[in-house]
Image (cartoon, rainbow, N blue to C red):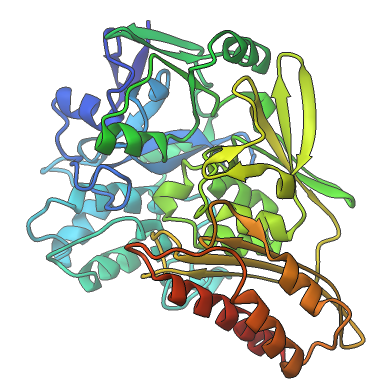
Length: 476
């Protein structure tokens, strides 16, 4: 039987259609705390907590906040979910709920359950450390170690954020008899092999990569899903349906992680949060990119494989990975092949990946360049789509640019390398004169268009300014 354990109670998934998202399923169960605000993962009103393997790979569990409006309910088969109703009751408020209440963190209340779940996941974060014990303390981190980025994907339209911030920074730490906190000491549920059929559609979670590749070979029209941060939007806002969904997010073969002197290998189904924590700064360019990739709610579900698989020209991952000379490993029932990312994209949302292939890994060669940066130009700093994104990786020696790699997003039908700008930099002094000349070249790269996010002229101007900014930041 397919089921989800919600607030400690099993909930049957039999007969639930593959296009039914987790939010609608929970609300049909009478758990109406989670709300639909945007249906695309930008407001956080639908946030819930899921028991997941700890992102640091320790083998224990951690409570992870996700947008329930995006993944199919079937994606949570065999998993444990806690909603705002499961955190506390009116007679016994959870510490997060208590602080939100006494500090005025709620007015209309529409967004409050989502805030409470995002804050709850941060409340239970195992490595949250107070400032007096080595934890950070700045505008984004309270003295209690609470990271405000945990609620970067939650929007409030009436209360304002100051009282919510006050509530977050007033939280203590879980008591020893806190049952939700105690749950972290044991492993998270293993991913269940799932087969659900309803409404003439099917959701399959294969048990192995071999089975997944066989399914792809036999069903060319199947839709591959991992975190569903892209597919969920298509279902919710565009009414898209698929006859067959194949889930690959928990395949062990797609969740590897290794670091050697020669390379870093990132499993395509690792979430961006898992990548960020496991890298621990060893690829500064990737760390800078993930910090601006959507919100924490999105990064807790989104994967590099999905970001590359959709082929979007405004994805944040490709510009950074292009600058790092990354490659993708593609697997099919016939075998595997490795393709440089610079050769992967062929057109708007098109690539050299065949319908029967999966991205299994992203490979980044080491050592990486000493000077790297990721510049994202968007209308707000976090939880936004790029107008322009630029990844830089430069090697300097004796004041000369020996090697330059620049990846661009948002200025062409595909992510691209800024080849002309790289040539304008290599072999020349790292000076204001060189940078000004190269900035003019960079401003002419690609074929930017005007749309609702930015004009073509603005995109070109931002490219040139981005290189000047890099020089200003890197020069004493």
